[in-house]
Length: 341
Image 1: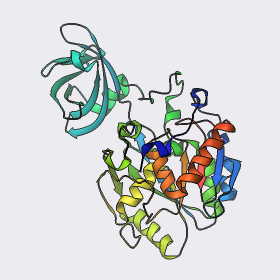
Image 2 (image 1 turned 45 degrees about the horizontal axis):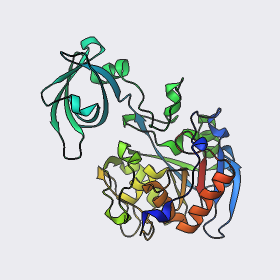
Image 3 (image 1 turned 120 degrees about the vertical axis):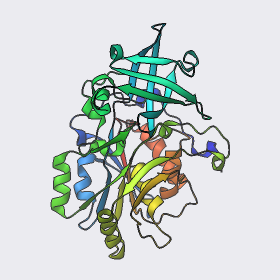
């Protein structure tokens, strides 16, 4: 399957630079897989669109302030470090800019020496392996010195850093937000629960690979990134009960969808556990757990558009995206949402 089959024209002006207020006032496009119909709603209409007994699965990861600006020891040259994932205690895989100016063994000082990073190795994928030294607790130091790692396509300043977190974010570890969840407010979640929608939380720490472009013609040749996930016994039991009772399982975001499909067995039962997943979902894939997907609008030719196409069908997906451009929906992290029924 060729990557060009997932291309569409996207004007730069439709890339959302700011979140809307309130969160649930964003637009919501609703796709029906059965009829091929497309409807236009507001996100808070989700209360009327979901059914009593539906299970809404949220990814409760929390974005860390993973962007650090420091100075190379001895030269005072500016170095930017973006933390990707912890490899071992105080040792992280990271992106370094400019990478060529920092050699193995050299150190970077952050906050005047509050935090120091030493380059240990250059990995095969071009990322860097860095060991950090500091006094106190690393998370506290990071909260003091780090910046929110907004995606490269967001060039506007974000005044409220909390707007790049979901209202249910709990466990720190992501370098990008699970953006479909940014539309929810505590009040909306309360209304859904009052209606009888069951809310379940799972975890997947979103990595920078979510923004990695597909550079091969045949999508099956694309090397998928791996991300840490965890699904506890309580969450698995609730989802499995819903599947047995033929109630819908709704994944909030592609991260929740990838997690559920990673832990689902051939019978569609969720097996609790934790680990790393590099699952790549594209047309031809048969979903085992996910019945409905709530997601944002994604990059042309991206693995996320391919995942959406696997559920909705490529033709309906591209039709919906082209209509979203005509109707001037807002795209990407702070953009509008799509519900695929």
